[in-house]
Image 1 (cartoon, rainbow, N blue to C red):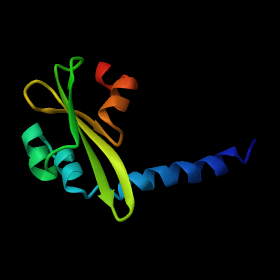
Image 2 (cartoon, helix red, strand yellow):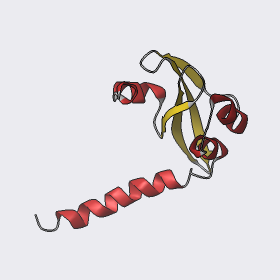
Image 3 (tube, rainbow, N blue to C red):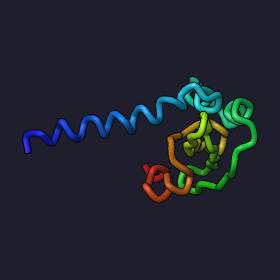
Length: 104
């Protein structure tokens, strides 16, 4: 039992490093920017893979598949009715909805 933290920390670190390799992607950088909008994110990332309405926030959500070398990672960005960024993350819009992200 006292060795459990020693086993968990490397696993958590591996997960966080996986996301970090995509942080320099143009769509991610545009999403992180202060005052990010739907227009600015799409200008940086190009046409999204898909888009869906999100009634919970009165807006929309777009999906991208980030690629770096042989690895891919989903990335979503949700916007309110005015096109202002509300939420984003390294999952899809559907996964965000199923986790209740838009209801918070």
